[in-house]
Image (tube, rainbow, N blue to C red):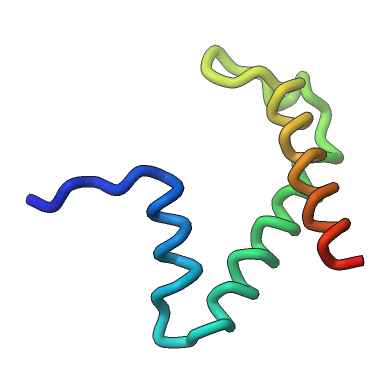
Length: 73
């Protein structure tokens, strides 16, 4: 059984190894951007769970959104 990749290696593979080439990179960045937008606008209380701090989840979405927006600008 192959060794499971860590998250960084997995995302690196998504970005670098696709039959669609750079289009896969655009897809990944677009998906991150759209999901970060959605979560950044959410009420942290609606996300809160025993496993996830709603405030932290919204906070990381805002951080990622800011980095993506700054890269595009």
